[in-house]
Image (tube, rainbow, N blue to C red; front, side):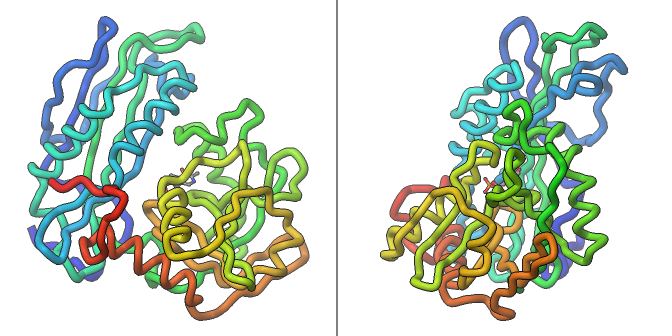
Length: 334
Ligand SMILES: *Cc1c(COP(=O)(O)O)cnc(C)c1O
């Protein structure tokens, strides 16, 4: 094994093992560590036709003190279960999920990037229906596989502003209320708008609300947050966005450091007023947005990382790497 920690991006990389659970006869079995990434399923498996496939994303960090901290795995377990519920899939016990993540990390411990490289281990659980069936119905059997891989920055260049473009006319977000679900189907439908944004030199698509196209929803893989000129933290209240655990944590941190937090609808006309804008999520952490292209308008923000975003970034990463007191007991130590 010879990993150049400083050069890590956000790409699939096989590690020693993944951990697998099978659901059959109405219950989840015991976890099995598996050294292969291959899986054999029936061509008629539900997940391939009717899309019973959900996932999660969380990270673990090697701290200054050498300890490995998993960031809020209970929240990911709970969100996995709310996605499962919505797609008629079985829930997975929260404690069993946390134990599985620990077992997986222990077995892949040499893949956790050293402290100081800015890297982390990205943990990706995926659950899918495997029962062969042609009539539309929910699967009877499921597989939950959790894998882990070392990761660096999601957008190349690290903590620097990137451009975003609003994409409209795509109903990814929820004609059936699925915008709140971290599932394969939503992501498949987001690929075309994301491709259009990229073709316009914007790494990040910005989704507006599907009903009126007048309110900000979220970025392609991350929530939207803005800092107003008078220093308030603003983030959309919307029924068609994914409830980000990073955003939830940042709202708490913002309150802790005395900022006013507003979760409310954000009209696109407000984009002209914000001092700082960022995308937030496990993979992107906080990624400042340099410009937003919205119809025939361009909104420009700082070319540098703003002071408020920097403070939020330093605090959340400080908690993750064990440099800042974890006053809310968010991290689980291996
Ligand atoms: C995962 C995800 C996010 C970010 O959620 P975190 O819990 O912060 O990682 C935001 N939007 C979408 C669409 C997502 O899939």
